[in-house]
Image (cartoon, rainbow, N blue to C red; front, side, top):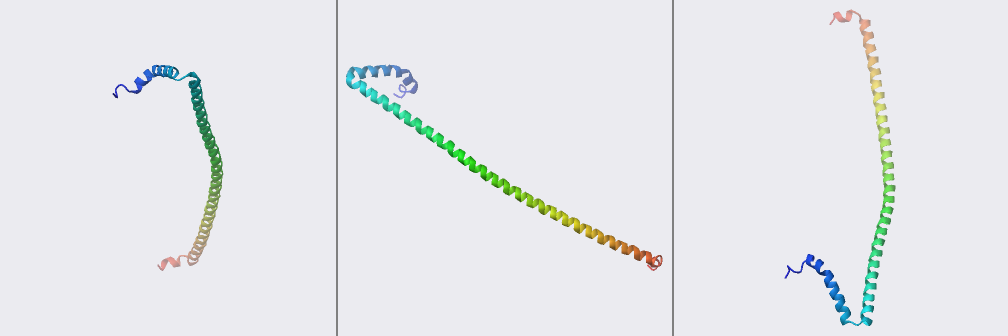
Length: 136
């Protein structure tokens, strides 16, 4: 039985079924009742399709509005995050520069201290002269 009731067979038989159903409808139901029933069915189907279409567009419009609002909020949040990161980078850069300056200052002080010590050693060696080297 399933062999005969397939989608392909239904598609091929649909025009014949439509013609036979229409003939039977108008043969057994009088026109004064049949035409208004068909009109009501057609109007019902048309109204149903319009309602479904309007709901789908409302949802689409609502989705686009929500996406626009969310994208605006996201843009504001992104700007705030960017500003915060920029401030953080600036503070880190200032800290690095300050540390570099401190290192340079300490290196210069050590170098000056070493230069002063070297000068002192050179002067003492000169003052001792050759006498200081013989004793050793």
